[in-house]
Image 1 (cartoon, helix red, strand yellow):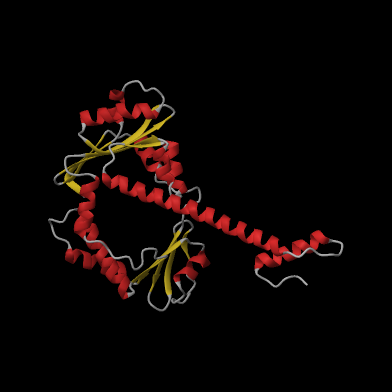
Image 2 (spheres, one colour):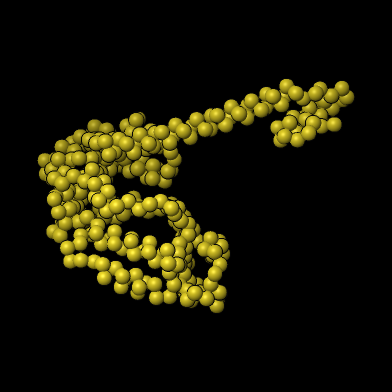
Length: 318
């Protein structure tokens, strides 16, 4: 949802590299497989990590998950011959001059869903299969709640007591009009104490003076953000906020709700693990209570045999 006059300011090469490094995957990033077929045979195979593969006249029709396993891919996207041209033709027929970036992206998703239903495009895995697509009005309201017109969204990252990088997004009535980097902010922040929990306040004050009122601000250390992105465990973001490893300020309801859900997921996971252990302990105690004490020698071995049978649900040892 970019305004026509959007400006990029305050970036140098190092700042761009640092920002993009946050979105790098794990040391072994996922590898995808692109397949082009004509309905009867595979015409082209492109592996995101290996490169072009020889289809070898392989017939089309194998399930995509089996195709992924065969070529060592984590996901697969398959196109019928001519599907890409058809996608662009349909999208071009729907676009209007007044469409903004969000309108264009939304119409593109609609065309992809239509062609997927027709079988011209296929993908695996389909994690969101069956999930209804929200309306464009709902998406716009979500964007307005995250960053209303006239407000600013900012992320400030620190490392070793210094301002590592920032990303500041300013929005007007027509959309995002400014995307600012840290270059012009570093000189105004002043001397830092070395503890981001105190230093973030100076950065927040400078942004509000030079850019505008901050609607949502996220401040943390680079290592913490990378750990949270890599972990993906339920409750990790809420826990980091609680112990102030991650600071969200201001925190509108649009951010409080996801954190609350993350905390609930973390609590549910912890309770599940605890209850599972209690269940195992109960079965263990019941099994021990019903084990018969053998009268012959080698009682320890016989008792263990019966205990294993009890826990596995099998008949008692003779």
